[in-house]
Image 1 (cartoon, rainbow, N blue to C red):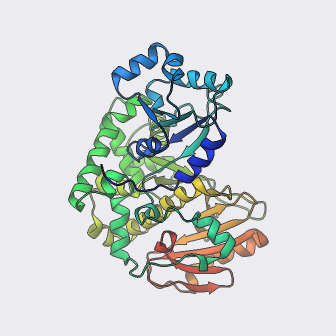
Image 2 (cartoon, rainbow, N blue to C red; image 1 turned 90 degrees about the vertical axis):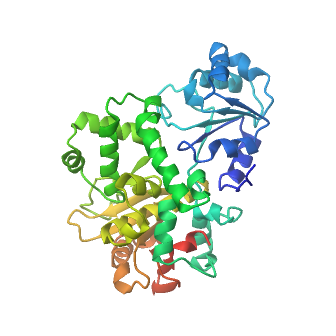
Image 3 (cartoon, rainbow, N blue to C red; image 1 turned 120 degrees about the vertical axis):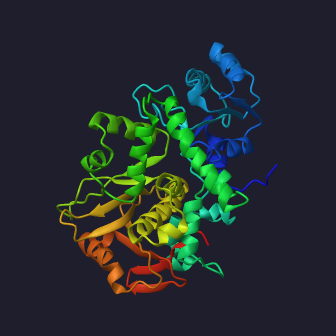
Length: 412
């Protein structure tokens, strides 16, 4: 059996299971949820196996009654009746650490009257972050260290990647089968197969898609505009599909945690900000099979390179936000006339913000921080820190509260 790579969520799961009877781990298919869940449980119910699913469907309460606990209920969405059984077990006094549920769909998680409301603690999980691949998951979350200790808390590796290395890492992605593959060729083939199965089979778990090729075409349009703010009309014009179909596709892809819309940030100190969400592929590696490009092709396309690096940095920050003690939320900022734009804004639970720009530049100058200075001047003491993440080897100061950091500082 391959060696287990500790995940960022492992300490959080230990903490939650010590206090709560049931925890729900939600993430894309094949991101490692089951492997991690088994590390925290004694037994496993595999609902993606027809025989086990039939037993649970026939009598979900009996299937859960005897444990042994902690019990892993894998892929709950295949037999959604199991949620009612978990609810009843919790209501009847199940002890802390009784159940870990995993699912590859966010379907019904926010629906009113969902059986698990108030009974399950939700933990988002994604593909392997670079910090996990570099075996650094035992350290406190990056955002927590930045806020408490400043940029000096983030060390650098002895041999930081160059821009080619960053592009290769981003296109390899975080899905364990691809990230840990024996060769780049094997990784690319796995990712291509994942996309094929996604558009032809996985979407049937959460909705009906009559034409997989149209769904692929729509997903390709999102890939080409990842880390951007395309209007829905732009996507419709690019794909030739109708608005209701596009809305249905968006719902499906977001339920399966393949795409994400990061909302625009708002503040009463800033007027005339755009209200469009910023669209992302949750894992930037999908750019490869969807657009038919490799690292060399990306490096010849400045626009696509910028989108890839932004999506790559967002993937690292998304995983960090899931385990941070600061209750962070991710946004973007852009004014209506397009003169100012901050790639990523992290709003902390206390109202302070961290502004982040991502640059395909090995030595960004003072001008790279102009949008962060605009944000700082506009919001005053709510501005905690500004970062310009770049592809060079060294950190340096750009302004009193703005630092330039190599992207790898997020995991080194």
